[in-house]
Image 1 (cartoon, rainbow, N blue to C red):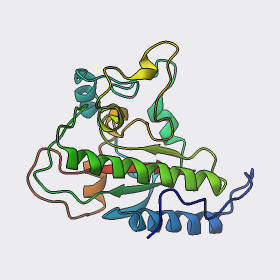
Image 2 (image 1 turned 180 degrees about the horizontal axis):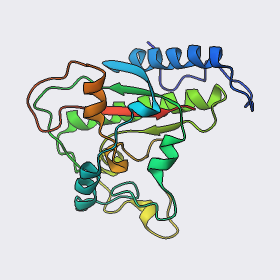
Image 3 (image 1 turned 90 degrees about the vertical axis):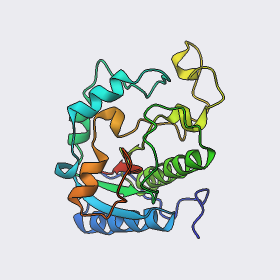
Length: 212
């Protein structure tokens, strides 16, 4: 099995020109990599397949009981939706979880086994983002699920980057989630006709890596 700690399998120089044939091959390989690393489903999608829901974003913004630098997400000088729309392709994947897996929102995640599923999701997201970067797609951007503070810093009293002069203790892993950017992962999965477990308020744990 491929290890998340493996050295990059492909390293290329950044080029001003993207070869569409090579890009297609890379996207397919990154999709397969997600599956190899433990995703239940993975697909190559286009930017128009990324579905935004303003109501989801409102719910996240109202969920501020366990805040982090990535939850709720505030970029006052940048339009993240516009930035994501600037990409053309992405890898979307999900983890296999039970239908009674609860929606934790911003956290905390009391169940240790559930936290491990989130951790695995973040690891796969980071691995795909890194692989995309080393293949020459230097703007690769990975989004996960939930609040990274509840995954990596459950025992910390604060999210350290929110304190002046302090830095994230997991900078290679901590990142925004899809719901914090207003992206509806469940609707994307439905559009792909993925079989999802019935029941539960939010039965999906998914990641999105924008490639180019």
